Length: 267
Figure 1 (tube, rainbow, N blue to C red):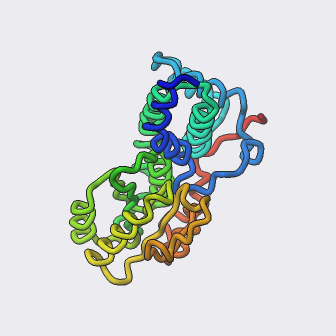
Figure 2 (cartoon, rainbow, N blue to C red):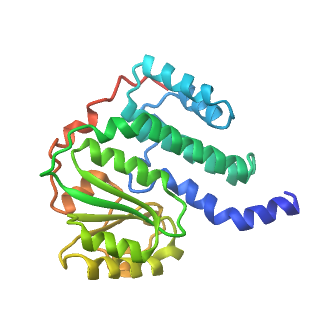
Figure 3 (cartoon, rainbow, N blue to C red):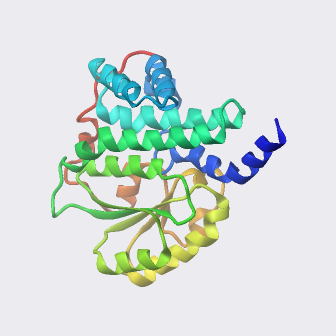
């Protein structure tokens, strides 16, 4: 590895480590590709497409996946996160550059918004349903997982306020002015636990004393005592478990999670 590559890896390592965690943030999707029945053909095609500057290539792959009866939900919840993991792993193996991973991650997020945003926002919304905030704190870079989680929650009928990289003062103001039923915070690294504790303290001061705070994300894989070290109520990377722990029941019911899932082709 060249000296320049080492310097790039040193300065960008934390960001790329967060990218590798991003697909896992607030998700119970660490099972293998085979367990999910994902198609290696389409995983490879999607990875090549997001590494290409040709936006038409990404659209073509998604269109082909839809024709193959791979549902939009599966593309958002499984294929996009798995491609993000593979980009992060390729960087760790020094087979792609930091710039390539950063650009590829941005393209995955854009793709997630394009195929998942309107679809999730319009489904099963109800004013009487649960109202939660999903947060990635300032100076964290693993936003993809939180975006995937937001889509899952909205498909369950939960109203979601997504806050990415907002300063603590803004978080306090939003919590103070909103009637949230829970706050879900995505955290990638053990190094972030001090700032997470500050955020949890601020959330508690700004909201109701009984407002549950849930920590999820890559941090749960480090063995850290997350609740003890942050003051959060719960720690889980399973969306249904998070809702259950907070005493929340989505209007649509958990079965709605399978509403747009197509038949998955064999790997």
